[in-house]
Length: 337
Image 1: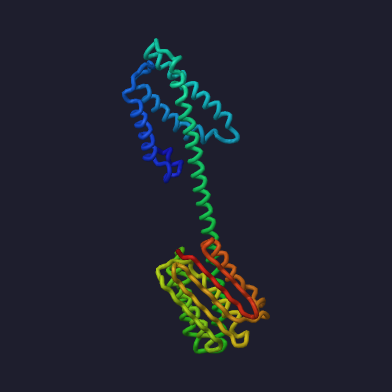
Image 2: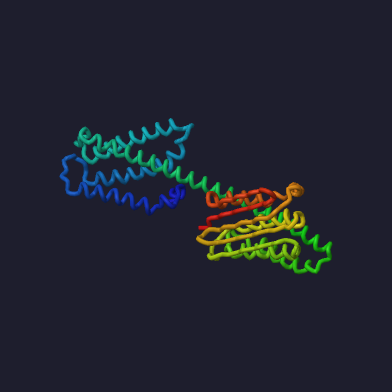
């Protein structure tokens, strides 16, 4: 049964082969049961020869086809098949003559010659389908591995980028000798623990991302105090839904980075809603166009999120970013079903 390891197990298991042959031979037995003889063939001729034909089926499928059906050796395959059919034909006649020297081959030529052809054709088609399924499965596996590697790379970019920006915030608080430095460091440690340990899996509960997002916003509020109008609305009706980690923070991070301390009367409006297996997220803030090109690394987080959305939620996410009249607005919709 080691041959079957060469074809997709989900489609061509040994049990399935046995079932197909049993149904085929059972049907033939029912069709020809009780029919009068007259063809001169031995009683068990069809049973024995069909068992031989089954052997031809697998000999072609797992030996001849994989070795000779290619651009280089196709002619060897054709010659070999012709040789197999010739040997089958004259081999059967030899055996029949040996049992009955008076056996008349003239009236039985078609019965002797054509069955191996049908089995070999079926074997050829079977192997073509099996190889196509295997090729498609391998291609899907390679694609999944490629996407997984790319996603791991993108995730690996998130933490250093986030840490770089948060360290800049801590330095700012340290220079001010602010009493908020200690609680800020505590919240930062919680965020880092979340990023380094709790997001190791592929996806996790929406509530974890919301909790992480809330911690980040509170951390920023500790730093900026009442310098800005910050409004946050986080609602979720389906806490058990799963999502890709660290998709939302870059948008909020961007709003704090390019709004507070730069524009007059800064505001940030953040809204998240999870219902009907849909995640709806929006961030709206005012910004200064003069500052938008100061930081060379400012686009890392957003471009990272865009690439991850393409990889993980193809056709299931909608991201809209608008910059108009000093207002920056992000709207994200993800189908979490």
